[in-house]
Each structure stands twice: as C-alpha cells, then as structure tokens.
Amino acid sequence: MSLVERAAKRLEELGKAGVQAAGDLTYRPSEGQVAPTLIERAVRGIETFDEQWNTHGRIPPAIQPPQAPDSPSFDDPTGTDRAHLDSGLEGTNVRGSGTSSQPFRAHSASRQGQRVELDLSKLASAGFLQPESSESQLANEFRKIKRPLIKACQGKSAMPIQNANRIMVTSSIQGEGKTFVSLNLALSIAMERDSTVLLIDADTTRPGLSRLAGLASKPGLLDLLAGGSVEVSDALFRTNIERLSLLPAGTGQRQATELLASAAMEQLVQHLASRYPDRILIFDTPPLLGAPEPAVLASHMGQIIVVVEADRTMHKVLTKALTTIQSCPVVTTVLNQASSPEQGYFYAG
Image (cartoon, rainbow, N blue to C red; front, side, top):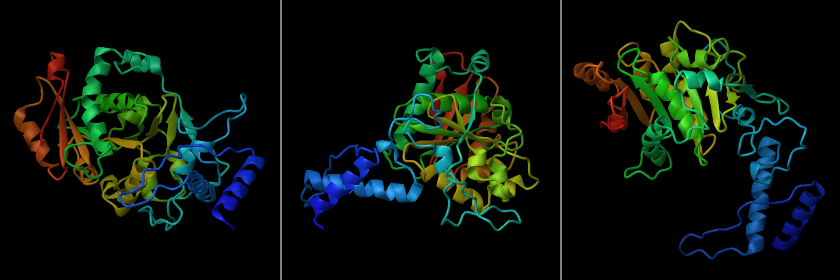
C-alpha cells in the first residue's frame, strides 16, 4: 500500500471513530534533509497517534475529542489525566525498598486521578499568592525568582544544567520560610502557560506542606519508596490550581533517610521528572542543618533554593549549610522577610 493510500485509509478509520487528526504539521528538516510533503507529515502524525493509542489506550491530548458538557473532567490543561498516566511504570526497574518485590504498580485504565481542593481564602490569609492577584508585590517578587529557574529548565541558560527541572527548596535552620517559598514558587510557576508543577513534600520529619493541603494522612512519597500496594496514582493529587499537582510526604517511616537515599528514590524522581517535558518538580525539604535528608536529596537535584531569613540567620550558619550541598551545580539564595523588595533574592555559586 502506498504512502498516500495508507494516509487515506487511516484518516477514514479515524473519521469513523469520530476523531479528527489535528496538531502542528510543520516540520523543520535537519541540514541536508529534504522537507517531507504535506501527506508525509500527515502520515507521521497518524503514526504518532497510533503509537500513543497503543501505549496509553486513549486519545492523545492533541486530538482529544470534546467531552459532553455534563460529564466530569479529570483532565489537566493538556487534555491528559496525568495522575492516570503517571502510574504507567510497566517495563521499568523501579522498585520500592520494602519487603515487597513488586515494582510501583500501574492501575487500571478506568481509574481516575485524585483531586484536592486547596482553600484559597485560608492561603490568602496566611500570605500566600492568589491566582487572581497577579500584579501584587509578592507575585512580582516570585516572578524574579522563578524566571531564571524556568529558563534553566527550558535549556536556555548560559550553561546547560543537568536535571534542571528538579528544584529543591530548603533553609539552613528551621523557621526561615522554606515551605512558604516552596508553595508560592509552585503557585507562581503554575501561572505559566508552558509549565506544569508537581510540588513534593519531602520534609518527612515535619510535613508542613502536607498539613497545609489537608493531605497529612494520605499516602505519599515515603509509601511509594517503602514498597507495598501503594500505586503512584494513590499518592498524586491534582488541585484546583490549574497546572499544579501535589505529592504529600506520606506515612512516617523509621528509615526515612535510607529510603530517600535508595535506588528507588532515584528511579521515582527520574520517572516523575521525565514523564512530561513541561513538568517542573519542586521539593520542600527539611533544613540543611536540622536533618540528614537534605544532603541526600541534594544528589538528585539540578537546582537548589536556600531560604535565608533576613536579620536572623548568621553568616557562619549559612556558610556551614551551603557546604552540605556543594555537589549541586546551581544554588539560589532567597532572602525572606527582607526590609525592601530590592533585597529579595541573590545567587550564590
């Protein structure tokens, strides 16, 4: 069957199924290559459709047919149920560190993603960003902080940064505002049209982020690492903030540090970070000088933000804290509770 006949036949099949092939058919050939014809580009798009259909058992986001007006939607802005697809770990070597030898399990195709409603009014009263307050001073401050981070994630920084979309937020000591910065940074990045955020509570000793979101009793990061019956989709929660999802800390474990240092942690982070090209992971972690976990987590990161409380954290304390994360290529120091906006943040290293 010729190329044209294949395209016509497949388009006819899609038409009978009520699906219209769509998406960008533009193509920029590499040097020395001849640009394909329109019908060749169409065939290439159809083959991509078939590949995604066979992989996920569903219509990919670029050609998702509209839902009926009264049907509930669990889809994210790209039209893909990410909590659903994030569980698709078949064929990988990802395994928990518990007694179970089962890899992180994928759920059935009929299962829908979980959702949590963030109380925006309570967050506002606590000083957090609000989607409708895009021109507030706080919103502008976090624009300054996020812009170079996103630029690095997109490969547009002066020097390429490996694992740039893995961002860890920490502090030297307790109480400097790391969770405040973590959530606000996630909210700010979620306002971007070309990025989505998975905010991960990796502060397994004091999971303040999980409590803020009302997810303190839900399965999360530690449950996935410990092995057992918890699936990835059991631990991921979509929110009422577009483009923002949460992964809570999960059930406390005696060997939390060892779990975070395990091969399962690296495999899980690798999967979550590479699952979608527009996704940015933000980890809220314990203080650098308060627990051993941050030094372990730092080995998985491409960028680290260290929150420093103005007029409180001593220089020698900060210096000592920074020595624990020297392996990370990019460290951004954010000055919290500064007396003027101009003192908001600076880079170190």
